[in-house]
Amino acid sequence: MRRLRISAISYLNTAPLMWDFEHGDAGREFDISYTLPSACARALEAGTADIGIIPAAAYTQIPGLMVLPGVAIASRRPVKSILLVSKVPTDEIRTVALDTSSMTSVALTKILFEKWLGGTRTYSPMAPDIDKMLAQNDAGLVIGDPALQIDRSRHFTLDLAEEWIRYTGKPFVFAFWAVREDALREDSLLQDALCGDGRIRPSASRSDASVRGHDLSAAFQQSRDHGLAPASLDHIAAEWAPKLGMSETDVRLYLTENIYYQLDAACLEGLQLFYCYAAEIGALPTAPEMNFLDNPKPCVAESRV
Image (cartoon, rainbow, N blue to C red; front, top):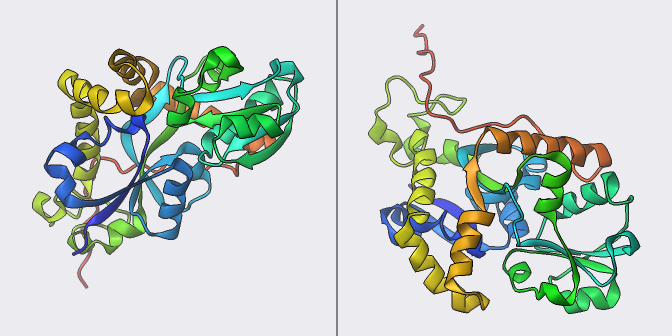
């Protein structure tokens, strides 16, 4: 039996989500790698990862995914780490460099311009180097840790979560955990324990599924909860503050005030609105229905002929 492969994002805002996998026993159950959001999505699409903290936009483009419920990287206020940085006021922006690390924020940028900020602009993909971006464009989209390190006193800046909330009144969901259905079916422990639609067979014991199956969601929810405990946040702040040139206080505030880690009803409403607008302007394909890896429901026992 091979271990399920997790592709996680190598940004500060993922650190609380990975707490149990890095500091607890859960890590022994998985093979873990770290990458950028867009590369995480590509790994799931290619089948080189089984579980990923995928950009919300990727769910519209990769078939056969199940969403692990309850956990997200979202925001209900300014997020600080998704910035449109420009050398001119917003209404004078004509060209925008788009961070190649991003999928969701690229679509969000296009939605904001198309619906509320004066119409479409000319976009070009670029690596997240704000000086090079602004040397060739009026503005640049920068996400994640590079955005946290931007000196906002030197530029015009828009916090894209803040703008979304201003115009829609809803939270914004940047990423969530998803698992490939094929990976669950391929897992030798689950082949006999799961029905064809991913639910637990009545004859299967909880130990058959181990951390997988219906316990998979709980493992990721518990890791988030443990990562947001005060002692864990102190540890994360001490580790990440010198990496990013931030104070430990600012790291804690970012993780507890700017980032929201629940995929709750309000976030799901915001996510559906994002998908609707993105499809409307052609930024993303129409999103499929959200397919959650829920708590197990017993399937009908198979008939014997």
